[in-house]
Each structure stands twice: as C-alpha cells, then as structure tokens.
Image (tube, rainbow, N blue to C red):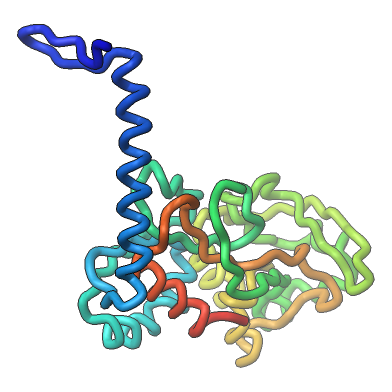
Length: 250
C-alpha cells in the first residue's frame, strides 16, 4: 500500500496514508493518555497552561487570585488570554476556558462554577436627572448602554420573579464590546446598563450604582470552566480547574 507521494520537491500523503496517519495518531494519543492517567495521580503540576476567559472576569476576579495559585503551583507557567469573543479552544490550542452564559458548543466538557445574573443599574446622579423607570417599557425613554457582543443587542429580554417575559427595544448613545467600559460609563452617570452582578455587584452594594426595576433581570445562565473532550486532564489543567472551583464556586 502506498502511503506517500514523493517527488524531488514535494512529499505528501496519499488518501490511504492520511487515513493511516489519523488512526495511528489517535492510538498514540490514547497510549499517552493512559500513561498520564496513572502518573498524574502523583504528578506535580508543571509546564505551560493556556487559559482563555472574558476580559472583565480575568481582571476583576482572576487577577487578585493568581498569587495564591502561583504560590501553590510554582512550576506552572500561566498564559492567560483575555478575550470577549468565543474562542475555538481546539484550533487555537487552549487547555481551559471560562465561559459566561449558555454553553453553545456541546462538544466541550463543562464544570459549573456559579450563577450568572444580569441586572439593570444606573448611577444616582443619572436617576436624579432622568428619573427612575417604573416599568420595563419605560426604558425606551432612557439612555441605555449597549453591549455589542450580545445577539440582538438592542432587545433586552427581561423576566420578573414569576418568570413572565418582557422584551424591550432600547437605544442609547454608547455601544461597546467592553463591559468594563460600560461599567465606567454608568458610574459617571452616562446611562443605564444591563450587566452581571459579578461585575457591578460591589458597586450596587457600595451605593455607587442603584438597581433599576429590581423585580426584573435577564434570564439566568451560568459561569462554566470548559475543556476539550477525549483527553485525560493533565495535572496542571486539573490543578487550575480545582482552584477555580475552590475559589469561585457560587
């Protein structure tokens, strides 16, 4: 059976060669997984770990926790990618990702960390000038700050405590793909935001922002740590996953 096509300038696989290579690579990967499954039980986490997550979560929550992780696992080198787009983990070579919202890629294995509730809020000075909305439809008369990475960005889907759904079409004079910019603008009295509590919860608690329509919120989702299927978790991946669960669950 010919596996290669060879000329003086080029070497390529035949169709049979490609099929053989794919199968053989899978067998070798399974052997590597089997060896690692046994050795990682006592292995010390080490090596490079590539993790991707939303920018705001990395800055607000992960960054303050990194000294604890690196002190516990000094032989792990972290490469953190802060990115608000949905990264293709396999194509781009990431070991672990943090996903906020519904998991659309069913091929990934997810571990739930916490709930993700998004609420409406504005600064007291904005409300003093523009008034406080009393009903969801009142938002149409307000300056609402728009997150551009959200599908149907101008349609805010709100549910009340009884689960009744309301869809309000909103507008405003600031649209951005960065939730930290939205938070900063809201703190400056720019307008109303719809953001997760893990971003603006401390601002609401401190009175820098006030909840708007407190009986309404965006339909709840969750925060997950996800990783590609089919491979045994290395000691370094497992160490980071367990640390995230320990530190951030709920």
